[in-house]
View 1 (cartoon, helix red, strand yellow):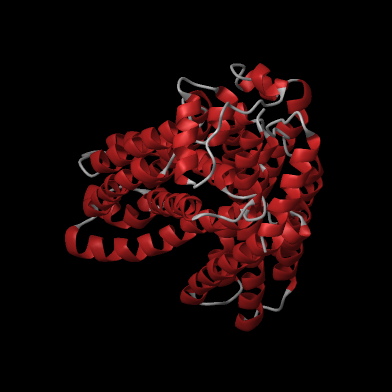
View 2 (view 1 turned 90 degrees about the vertical axis):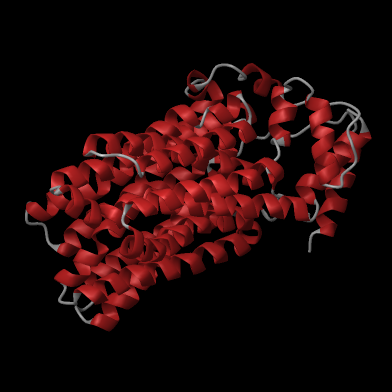
Length: 460
Protein backbone atom coordinates (compact mmCIF):
# COMPACT_ATOMS: atom_id res chain seq x y z
CA UNK A 1 0.00 0.00 0.00
CA UNK A 2 1.25 3.48 -0.79
CA UNK A 3 1.95 6.13 1.82
CA UNK A 4 -0.87 8.25 0.29
CA UNK A 5 -3.42 5.50 0.87
CA UNK A 6 -2.42 5.08 4.50
CA UNK A 7 -2.36 8.85 5.03
CA UNK A 8 -5.92 9.29 3.69
CA UNK A 9 -7.25 6.56 5.96
CA UNK A 10 -5.46 7.86 9.03
CA UNK A 11 -6.64 11.43 8.42
CA UNK A 12 -10.22 10.22 8.13
CA UNK A 13 -10.12 8.13 11.30
CA UNK A 14 -7.77 10.19 13.46
CA UNK A 15 -8.17 13.71 12.09
CA UNK A 16 -10.72 16.38 13.05
CA UNK A 17 -14.31 16.07 11.83
CA UNK A 18 -14.84 17.89 8.53
CA UNK A 19 -18.00 19.69 7.42
CA UNK A 20 -18.87 16.90 4.98
CA UNK A 21 -18.72 14.34 7.80
CA UNK A 22 -20.84 16.56 10.05
CA UNK A 23 -23.35 16.91 7.21
CA UNK A 24 -23.68 13.13 7.07
CA UNK A 25 -24.38 13.03 10.82
CA UNK A 26 -26.97 15.82 10.48
CA UNK A 27 -28.86 14.07 7.64
CA UNK A 28 -28.85 10.76 9.51
CA UNK A 29 -30.19 12.57 12.59
CA UNK A 30 -33.08 13.92 10.48
CA UNK A 31 -33.76 10.42 9.14
CA UNK A 32 -33.81 9.07 12.69
CA UNK A 33 -36.25 11.84 13.65
CA UNK A 34 -38.52 10.87 10.76
CA UNK A 35 -38.36 7.25 11.92
CA UNK A 36 -39.27 8.28 15.46
CA UNK A 37 -42.37 9.99 14.11
CA UNK A 38 -43.32 7.10 11.83
CA UNK A 39 -42.92 4.45 14.55
CA UNK A 40 -45.44 6.17 16.83
CA UNK A 41 -47.84 7.41 14.15
CA UNK A 42 -50.45 4.74 15.02
CA UNK A 43 -50.26 5.69 18.69
CA UNK A 44 -50.93 9.32 17.69
CA UNK A 45 -53.82 8.49 15.38
CA UNK A 46 -55.34 5.49 17.20
CA UNK A 47 -58.15 7.41 18.97
CA UNK A 48 -59.25 9.11 15.75
CA UNK A 49 -59.04 5.88 13.72
CA UNK A 50 -60.96 4.01 16.42
CA UNK A 51 -63.73 6.60 16.33
CA UNK A 52 -63.82 6.76 12.53
CA UNK A 53 -63.85 3.00 11.94
CA UNK A 54 -65.48 1.96 15.23
CA UNK A 55 -62.52 -0.20 16.24
CA UNK A 56 -62.02 -1.99 19.54
CA UNK A 57 -58.83 -2.56 21.53
CA UNK A 58 -58.05 -5.76 19.62
CA UNK A 59 -57.99 -4.01 16.24
CA UNK A 60 -55.92 -1.12 17.58
CA UNK A 61 -53.52 -3.63 19.11
CA UNK A 62 -53.19 -5.28 15.70
CA UNK A 63 -52.24 -1.95 14.11
CA UNK A 64 -49.68 -1.23 16.83
CA UNK A 65 -48.15 -4.69 16.59
CA UNK A 66 -48.03 -4.75 12.78
CA UNK A 67 -45.66 -1.81 12.71
CA UNK A 68 -43.36 -3.45 15.24
CA UNK A 69 -43.50 -6.71 13.29
CA UNK A 70 -42.54 -4.88 10.12
CA UNK A 71 -39.59 -3.25 11.88
CA UNK A 72 -38.37 -6.62 13.08
CA UNK A 73 -38.63 -8.07 9.57
CA UNK A 74 -36.90 -4.99 8.17
CA UNK A 75 -33.99 -5.34 10.57
CA UNK A 76 -33.67 -9.02 9.72
CA UNK A 77 -34.18 -9.04 5.95
CA UNK A 78 -33.85 -5.48 4.60
CA UNK A 79 -30.92 -4.19 6.69
CA UNK A 80 -28.52 -6.78 5.14
CA UNK A 81 -28.93 -4.96 1.80
CA UNK A 82 -26.33 -2.58 3.24
CA UNK A 83 -23.77 -5.39 3.04
CA UNK A 84 -24.86 -6.59 -0.41
CA UNK A 85 -25.68 -3.38 -2.30
CA UNK A 86 -23.95 -0.78 -0.16
CA UNK A 87 -25.04 1.43 2.75
CA UNK A 88 -26.19 4.28 0.49
CA UNK A 89 -28.47 2.20 -1.80
CA UNK A 90 -29.94 0.48 1.26
CA UNK A 91 -30.82 3.83 2.87
CA UNK A 92 -32.35 5.13 -0.37
CA UNK A 93 -34.43 1.97 -0.87
CA UNK A 94 -35.67 2.13 2.73
CA UNK A 95 -36.55 5.83 2.36
CA UNK A 96 -38.64 5.02 -0.72
CA UNK A 97 -40.39 2.15 1.10
CA UNK A 98 -41.07 4.41 4.07
CA UNK A 99 -42.39 7.24 1.87
CA UNK A 100 -44.74 5.02 -0.15
CA UNK A 101 -45.87 3.11 2.96
CA UNK A 102 -46.92 6.32 4.71
CA UNK A 103 -48.66 7.83 1.68
CA UNK A 104 -50.60 4.66 0.84
CA UNK A 105 -51.54 4.32 4.54
CA UNK A 106 -53.48 7.58 4.21
CA UNK A 107 -55.65 5.96 1.51
CA UNK A 108 -56.53 2.72 3.31
CA UNK A 109 -60.15 1.89 3.99
CA UNK A 110 -59.95 -1.02 6.44
CA UNK A 111 -58.00 -2.30 9.42
CA UNK A 112 -56.44 -5.08 7.33
CA UNK A 113 -55.24 -2.64 4.67
CA UNK A 114 -53.74 -0.27 7.23
CA UNK A 115 -52.11 -3.15 9.12
CA UNK A 116 -50.50 -4.35 5.88
CA UNK A 117 -49.16 -0.87 5.13
CA UNK A 118 -47.80 -0.62 8.67
CA UNK A 119 -45.85 -3.83 8.06
CA UNK A 120 -44.48 -2.42 4.80
CA UNK A 121 -43.59 0.90 6.41
CA UNK A 122 -41.91 -1.01 9.24
CA UNK A 123 -39.71 -2.80 6.69
CA UNK A 124 -38.27 0.56 5.70
CA UNK A 125 -37.86 1.76 9.28
CA UNK A 126 -36.15 -1.44 10.44
CA UNK A 127 -33.78 -1.47 7.48
CA UNK A 128 -32.88 2.20 7.63
CA UNK A 129 -32.06 2.39 11.34
CA UNK A 130 -29.31 -0.21 11.08
CA UNK A 131 -27.71 1.41 8.04
CA UNK A 132 -27.71 5.05 9.19
CA UNK A 133 -26.21 3.82 12.46
CA UNK A 134 -23.41 2.18 10.47
CA UNK A 135 -22.90 5.16 8.14
CA UNK A 136 -22.45 7.54 11.06
CA UNK A 137 -20.12 5.07 12.74
CA UNK A 138 -17.99 4.61 9.63
CA UNK A 139 -17.76 8.31 8.75
CA UNK A 140 -17.03 9.57 12.26
CA UNK A 141 -13.50 10.01 13.50
CA UNK A 142 -12.43 7.52 16.15
CA UNK A 143 -12.48 10.18 18.87
CA UNK A 144 -15.85 11.70 17.95
CA UNK A 145 -17.69 8.47 17.06
CA UNK A 146 -19.62 8.12 20.37
CA UNK A 147 -20.75 11.75 20.23
CA UNK A 148 -21.78 11.57 16.57
CA UNK A 149 -23.78 8.38 17.10
CA UNK A 150 -25.39 9.88 20.21
CA UNK A 151 -26.48 12.91 18.19
CA UNK A 152 -27.88 10.65 15.47
CA UNK A 153 -29.78 8.58 18.03
CA UNK A 154 -31.26 11.70 19.65
CA UNK A 155 -33.13 12.37 16.42
CA UNK A 156 -35.43 9.44 17.24
CA UNK A 157 -36.97 10.72 20.53
CA UNK A 158 -36.92 14.32 19.29
CA UNK A 159 -38.81 13.32 16.15
CA UNK A 160 -41.26 11.29 18.19
CA UNK A 161 -41.93 14.19 20.58
CA UNK A 162 -42.28 16.91 17.93
CA UNK A 163 -44.28 14.53 15.76
CA UNK A 164 -46.75 14.00 18.57
CA UNK A 165 -47.30 17.74 18.94
CA UNK A 166 -47.73 18.14 15.18
CA UNK A 167 -50.11 15.17 15.00
CA UNK A 168 -52.46 16.82 17.49
CA UNK A 169 -52.72 19.88 15.24
CA UNK A 170 -53.12 17.89 12.02
CA UNK A 171 -55.79 15.57 13.39
CA UNK A 172 -57.77 18.48 14.81
CA UNK A 173 -57.73 20.48 11.56
CA UNK A 174 -57.37 17.90 8.78
CA UNK A 175 -58.20 14.45 10.19
CA UNK A 176 -56.04 11.45 10.99
CA UNK A 177 -55.14 10.70 7.36
CA UNK A 178 -53.22 13.97 7.14
CA UNK A 179 -50.71 12.67 9.69
CA UNK A 180 -49.74 9.83 7.34
CA UNK A 181 -49.62 12.23 4.38
CA UNK A 182 -47.25 14.44 6.34
CA UNK A 183 -44.97 11.48 7.10
CA UNK A 184 -44.83 10.50 3.42
CA UNK A 185 -44.24 14.05 2.22
CA UNK A 186 -41.52 14.57 4.85
CA UNK A 187 -39.73 11.43 3.63
CA UNK A 188 -40.05 12.57 0.00
CA UNK A 189 -38.69 16.00 0.93
CA UNK A 190 -35.73 14.50 2.75
CA UNK A 191 -34.88 12.07 -0.05
CA UNK A 192 -33.07 14.65 -2.28
CA UNK A 193 -30.84 15.60 0.65
CA UNK A 194 -30.03 11.91 1.13
CA UNK A 195 -29.17 11.55 -2.56
CA UNK A 196 -26.96 14.64 -2.47
CA UNK A 197 -25.24 14.38 0.91
CA UNK A 198 -25.09 10.68 1.79
CA UNK A 199 -22.10 8.99 0.10
CA UNK A 200 -21.28 5.32 -0.04
CA UNK A 201 -19.29 4.05 2.90
CA UNK A 202 -15.54 4.11 2.25
CA UNK A 203 -15.16 1.05 4.46
CA UNK A 204 -17.68 -0.78 2.28
CA UNK A 205 -15.94 0.27 -0.96
CA UNK A 206 -12.54 -0.78 0.33
CA UNK A 207 -13.73 -4.11 1.73
CA UNK A 208 -16.23 -5.18 -0.94
CA UNK A 209 -14.43 -3.59 -3.92
CA UNK A 210 -17.43 -3.17 -6.26
CA UNK A 211 -17.02 -1.87 -9.82
CA UNK A 212 -15.22 1.50 -9.99
CA UNK A 213 -14.50 1.34 -6.25
CA UNK A 214 -11.27 3.33 -6.63
CA UNK A 215 -12.92 6.11 -8.65
CA UNK A 216 -15.86 6.27 -6.24
CA UNK A 217 -13.48 6.37 -3.26
CA UNK A 218 -11.48 9.24 -4.72
CA UNK A 219 -14.66 11.20 -5.47
CA UNK A 220 -15.65 10.87 -1.81
CA UNK A 221 -12.13 11.73 -0.62
CA UNK A 222 -12.25 14.93 -2.68
CA UNK A 223 -15.44 15.93 -0.85
CA UNK A 224 -13.61 15.18 2.40
CA UNK A 225 -10.64 17.29 1.21
CA UNK A 226 -8.32 14.29 1.61
CA UNK A 227 -5.59 13.04 -0.76
CA UNK A 228 -6.81 10.64 -3.48
CA UNK A 229 -5.74 7.00 -3.46
CA UNK A 230 -3.32 5.40 -5.87
CA UNK A 231 -4.78 1.99 -5.07
CA UNK A 232 -7.44 0.50 -2.82
CA UNK A 233 -6.32 -0.36 0.73
CA UNK A 234 -5.79 -4.00 1.62
CA UNK A 235 -7.97 -5.35 4.43
CA UNK A 236 -7.59 -8.38 6.66
CA UNK A 237 -8.09 -11.69 4.88
CA UNK A 238 -10.97 -12.78 7.11
CA UNK A 239 -12.97 -9.83 5.77
CA UNK A 240 -12.69 -11.17 2.24
CA UNK A 241 -13.70 -14.67 3.35
CA UNK A 242 -16.92 -13.33 4.88
CA UNK A 243 -18.07 -11.49 1.77
CA UNK A 244 -20.97 -13.76 0.81
CA UNK A 245 -21.69 -15.96 3.81
CA UNK A 246 -24.30 -13.68 5.42
CA UNK A 247 -25.98 -14.92 8.58
CA UNK A 248 -24.16 -18.24 8.52
CA UNK A 249 -20.83 -16.44 8.92
CA UNK A 250 -22.06 -14.64 12.03
CA UNK A 251 -22.48 -17.86 14.01
CA UNK A 252 -19.22 -19.49 12.95
CA UNK A 253 -15.68 -19.36 14.24
CA UNK A 254 -14.46 -16.02 15.58
CA UNK A 255 -17.73 -14.17 14.89
CA UNK A 256 -20.00 -16.35 17.06
CA UNK A 257 -19.14 -14.93 20.53
CA UNK A 258 -19.55 -11.34 19.39
CA UNK A 259 -22.80 -12.10 17.57
CA UNK A 260 -24.31 -13.90 20.56
CA UNK A 261 -23.15 -11.19 22.95
CA UNK A 262 -24.58 -8.42 20.74
CA UNK A 263 -27.94 -10.19 20.52
CA UNK A 264 -27.98 -10.87 24.27
CA UNK A 265 -27.15 -7.27 25.15
CA UNK A 266 -29.81 -5.92 22.80
CA UNK A 267 -32.44 -8.34 24.16
CA UNK A 268 -31.71 -7.60 27.82
CA UNK A 269 -31.53 -3.81 27.43
CA UNK A 270 -34.70 -3.60 25.34
CA UNK A 271 -36.59 -5.93 27.69
CA UNK A 272 -35.97 -3.72 30.72
CA UNK A 273 -36.16 -0.42 28.85
CA UNK A 274 -39.49 -1.08 27.15
CA UNK A 275 -40.98 -2.46 30.35
CA UNK A 276 -40.17 0.82 32.08
CA UNK A 277 -41.20 2.99 29.11
CA UNK A 278 -44.50 1.18 28.67
CA UNK A 279 -45.54 0.90 32.31
CA UNK A 280 -44.04 4.06 33.85
CA UNK A 281 -47.17 6.28 33.51
CA UNK A 282 -49.39 3.52 34.99
CA UNK A 283 -46.94 2.77 37.81
CA UNK A 284 -46.90 6.45 38.72
CA UNK A 285 -50.68 6.74 38.72
CA UNK A 286 -51.04 3.52 40.74
CA UNK A 287 -48.75 5.12 43.33
CA UNK A 288 -51.38 7.80 43.88
CA UNK A 289 -50.38 10.44 41.35
CA UNK A 290 -52.78 11.99 38.86
CA UNK A 291 -52.79 10.98 35.21
CA UNK A 292 -51.24 14.29 34.14
CA UNK A 293 -48.39 13.84 36.61
CA UNK A 294 -47.87 10.32 35.27
CA UNK A 295 -47.46 11.71 31.76
CA UNK A 296 -45.13 14.40 33.12
CA UNK A 297 -42.98 11.61 34.56
CA UNK A 298 -42.56 10.15 31.06
CA UNK A 299 -41.64 13.56 29.66
CA UNK A 300 -39.05 14.00 32.41
CA UNK A 301 -37.58 10.62 31.46
CA UNK A 302 -37.22 11.82 27.86
CA UNK A 303 -35.52 15.03 28.92
CA UNK A 304 -33.13 13.23 31.25
CA UNK A 305 -32.38 10.71 28.50
CA UNK A 306 -31.29 13.47 26.12
CA UNK A 307 -28.87 14.77 28.76
CA UNK A 308 -27.52 11.27 29.44
CA UNK A 309 -26.94 10.52 25.76
CA UNK A 310 -25.04 13.77 25.25
CA UNK A 311 -22.87 13.15 28.30
CA UNK A 312 -22.08 9.64 27.10
CA UNK A 313 -21.12 11.01 23.70
CA UNK A 314 -18.78 13.58 25.22
CA UNK A 315 -17.03 11.35 27.77
CA UNK A 316 -17.03 7.92 26.07
CA UNK A 317 -13.82 8.56 24.14
CA UNK A 318 -12.03 9.57 27.36
CA UNK A 319 -13.36 6.93 29.73
CA UNK A 320 -13.88 4.09 27.25
CA UNK A 321 -17.21 3.31 25.57
CA UNK A 322 -17.63 -0.17 27.06
CA UNK A 323 -16.79 0.86 30.62
CA UNK A 324 -19.14 3.84 30.48
CA UNK A 325 -21.87 1.72 28.87
CA UNK A 326 -21.57 -0.82 31.68
CA UNK A 327 -21.85 1.99 34.24
CA UNK A 328 -25.09 3.23 32.69
CA UNK A 329 -26.56 -0.27 32.45
CA UNK A 330 -25.77 -1.01 36.09
CA UNK A 331 -27.09 2.47 36.83
CA UNK A 332 -30.42 1.61 35.19
CA UNK A 333 -30.70 -1.46 37.41
CA UNK A 334 -29.97 0.65 40.48
CA UNK A 335 -32.28 3.54 39.62
CA UNK A 336 -35.13 1.12 38.78
CA UNK A 337 -34.75 -0.55 42.19
CA UNK A 338 -34.68 2.87 43.86
CA UNK A 339 -37.81 3.90 41.95
CA UNK A 340 -39.55 0.81 43.33
CA UNK A 341 -38.55 1.65 46.89
CA UNK A 342 -39.06 5.44 47.18
CA UNK A 343 -42.00 6.87 49.15
CA UNK A 344 -45.21 7.38 47.18
CA UNK A 345 -44.87 11.17 46.99
CA UNK A 346 -44.89 13.17 43.78
CA UNK A 347 -41.43 14.69 44.32
CA UNK A 348 -39.75 11.39 45.20
CA UNK A 349 -41.36 9.42 42.39
CA UNK A 350 -40.67 12.06 39.72
CA UNK A 351 -37.07 12.45 40.82
CA UNK A 352 -36.63 8.68 40.66
CA UNK A 353 -38.26 8.60 37.20
CA UNK A 354 -35.84 11.33 36.11
CA UNK A 355 -32.90 9.17 37.22
CA UNK A 356 -34.36 6.13 35.44
CA UNK A 357 -34.72 8.08 32.18
CA UNK A 358 -31.14 9.36 32.44
CA UNK A 359 -29.78 5.81 32.47
CA UNK A 360 -32.46 4.18 30.29
CA UNK A 361 -32.11 6.15 27.07
CA UNK A 362 -28.34 6.26 27.42
CA UNK A 363 -28.18 2.48 27.81
CA UNK A 364 -30.04 2.14 24.51
CA UNK A 365 -27.76 4.71 22.91
CA UNK A 366 -24.65 2.75 23.89
CA UNK A 367 -25.88 -0.13 21.72
CA UNK A 368 -25.67 2.06 18.62
CA UNK A 369 -22.08 2.89 19.49
CA UNK A 370 -20.80 -0.57 20.46
CA UNK A 371 -22.68 -3.16 18.41
CA UNK A 372 -21.80 -2.22 14.78
CA UNK A 373 -18.08 -2.30 15.58
CA UNK A 374 -18.33 -5.95 16.64
CA UNK A 375 -18.98 -7.12 13.09
CA UNK A 376 -16.59 -7.15 10.12
CA UNK A 377 -17.28 -4.51 7.48
CA UNK A 378 -18.86 -6.90 4.98
CA UNK A 379 -21.28 -8.26 7.63
CA UNK A 380 -21.90 -5.06 9.57
CA UNK A 381 -25.43 -4.29 8.31
CA UNK A 382 -26.42 -7.96 8.59
CA UNK A 383 -25.08 -8.34 12.13
CA UNK A 384 -26.48 -5.04 13.38
CA UNK A 385 -29.87 -5.85 11.85
CA UNK A 386 -29.88 -9.27 13.51
CA UNK A 387 -29.06 -7.78 16.92
CA UNK A 388 -31.80 -5.16 16.48
CA UNK A 389 -34.30 -7.88 15.58
CA UNK A 390 -33.50 -9.80 18.76
CA UNK A 391 -33.77 -6.50 20.64
CA UNK A 392 -37.29 -6.02 19.31
CA UNK A 393 -38.21 -9.41 20.74
CA UNK A 394 -37.02 -8.14 24.09
CA UNK A 395 -39.06 -4.95 23.63
CA UNK A 396 -42.19 -7.06 23.21
CA UNK A 397 -41.30 -9.52 25.98
CA UNK A 398 -40.62 -6.99 28.76
CA UNK A 399 -44.03 -5.28 28.90
CA UNK A 400 -45.80 -8.63 28.49
CA UNK A 401 -43.93 -10.29 31.38
CA UNK A 402 -44.67 -7.26 33.54
CA UNK A 403 -48.40 -7.70 32.92
CA UNK A 404 -48.18 -11.41 33.77
CA UNK A 405 -46.32 -10.72 37.04
CA UNK A 406 -48.79 -8.02 38.03
CA UNK A 407 -51.71 -10.36 37.35
CA UNK A 408 -49.98 -13.01 39.48
CA UNK A 409 -50.02 -10.65 42.44
CA UNK A 410 -46.33 -9.65 42.56
CA UNK A 411 -45.66 -6.46 44.47
CA UNK A 412 -44.29 -3.42 42.63
CA UNK A 413 -40.78 -3.70 44.14
CA UNK A 414 -40.67 -7.41 43.28
CA UNK A 415 -41.58 -7.23 39.62
CA UNK A 416 -39.47 -4.11 39.03
CA UNK A 417 -36.48 -5.85 40.58
CA UNK A 418 -37.05 -8.99 38.48
CA UNK A 419 -37.33 -7.02 35.24
CA UNK A 420 -34.31 -4.84 36.08
CA UNK A 421 -31.96 -7.81 36.56
CA UNK A 422 -31.42 -8.23 32.78
CA UNK A 423 -29.45 -4.98 32.86
CA UNK A 424 -26.82 -6.69 35.01
CA UNK A 425 -26.64 -9.52 32.45
CA UNK A 426 -26.29 -6.93 29.67
CA UNK A 427 -23.41 -5.24 31.48
CA UNK A 428 -21.69 -8.61 31.92
CA UNK A 429 -22.06 -9.42 28.22
CA UNK A 430 -20.28 -6.22 27.24
CA UNK A 431 -16.94 -7.92 27.89
CA UNK A 432 -17.59 -10.05 24.79
CA UNK A 433 -18.29 -7.06 22.52
CA UNK A 434 -14.81 -6.79 21.05
CA UNK A 435 -14.43 -4.51 18.00
CA UNK A 436 -13.59 -6.23 14.74
CA UNK A 437 -10.17 -4.83 13.83
CA UNK A 438 -10.09 -4.20 10.10
CA UNK A 439 -7.65 -1.44 9.30
CA UNK A 440 -5.91 -0.92 5.97
CA UNK A 441 -2.41 -2.35 5.97
CA UNK A 442 0.89 -0.66 5.25
CA UNK A 443 4.16 -2.42 4.55
CA UNK A 444 5.93 0.07 6.76
CA UNK A 445 4.80 -0.04 10.38
CA UNK A 446 6.74 3.08 11.25
CA UNK A 447 4.70 5.12 8.76
CA UNK A 448 1.45 4.08 10.45
CA UNK A 449 2.88 4.80 13.87
CA UNK A 450 3.96 8.29 12.86
CA UNK A 451 0.62 9.04 11.21
CA UNK A 452 -1.25 7.80 14.28
CA UNK A 453 0.76 10.15 16.47
CA UNK A 454 0.27 13.08 14.14
CA UNK A 455 -3.46 12.39 13.81
CA UNK A 456 -3.92 12.21 17.57
CA UNK A 457 -2.22 15.55 18.07
CA UNK A 458 -4.61 17.27 15.67
CA UNK A 459 -7.71 16.32 17.68
CA UNK A 460 -7.98 18.50 20.74
